[in-house]
Image 1: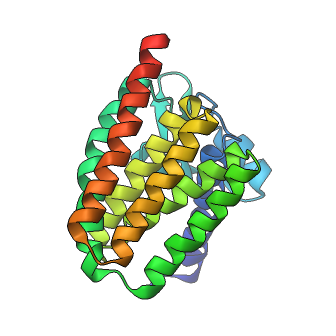
Image 2: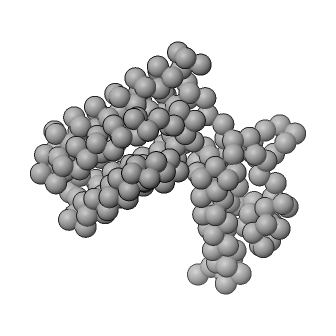
Length: 220
C-alpha cells in the first residue's frame, strides 16, 4: 500500500495535469508558451512537485516539448506534422469504429448522439470553439467503441495532438458543416451495426480533412 502522502501527491499531479491539458487544448496556453513550474505552481495553488509531474506527463504525451535553455513549452505542430498524425489516426480510428460496430453498447452510441446534438448547436451559433470541443469529444469517443484500452489510449493521444495541429486551419464554417454531416454518417452506420459502412464513412471524413489541409498548405 502506498503511503498517504504519496497518494495525495499523485492526486494533486492528476488534477494539475487535467487543468493544464484542458488549458492547452482550449488555447489558453498557446503553442510555445513556457510551462514554468514555479509560475504554474503559484497559479494552481499547489506545490511544485505535482506540477512538475504533470508537465512531464504532458511532454510524454506530446502536448509539450522540452527546449534547451527554456524548459518545457506547449508543443507547436506544423501542418506537415498534422498530415502525418492524420495518417496514423485514420488507421486507428477506422479500426476502432469497425470493431465498435459490434462491440459498442447502446449508451456508447447515445453519448455520440448527444455530442452531435451539441455540435449542431455550435454550428447554428457559429461557435468555432464549441465546435472544436465537440469534435475532440466525438473522435475520442470513437476511440472507445472497441472497448480495447490500448487502442483507446493511442487514439486519444493522437486526437489531442491533431487538435492542436489542425486548430489554425479549422476556421471555415463550410468545412465544419461538412465535418458535422460526415460525423452523422459515421454514427448512422454504427447505429445500424454496419462495420464496413462505419469504416467507409470515417475514411471519407479523413480524406476530406486531408485534402482540405493539403489545399490550405498550398495557399500558405
